[in-house]
Amino acid sequence: MTDKIQANSIASTAESPKQEAQHAANTEKSMSLAQAVRLYPKAVGWSVVLSSALIMEGYDLALLGSLYASPQFNQKYGVLNSETGKWSVPASWQSALYDSLFIFSRQY
Image (cartoon, rainbow, N blue to C red):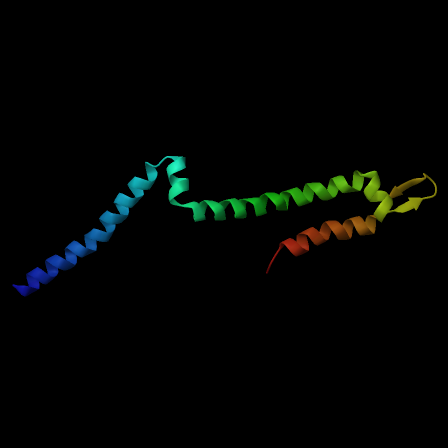
């Protein structure tokens, strides 16, 4: 008799977490965005921070290319070409700067 009671209680506790998880999943799926933000502010904060990091990674690549076209950047960090009279960053430095973005963005 005690074996049946013990088996019954084990079976009911085994189903209980599954039912709780299903109920929690259904509740979260039916939430509005505002409710989810109020309920999980830390998760939203971390999501914003990590997404911003990924966005800034792409922005860095675009920013570096536009710096080479800037006259102020070329005058400050470039050399004067005596034939054309224009300032430009040498190709070796452009390559080094561009490659450093990939070297320092990858963590092994």
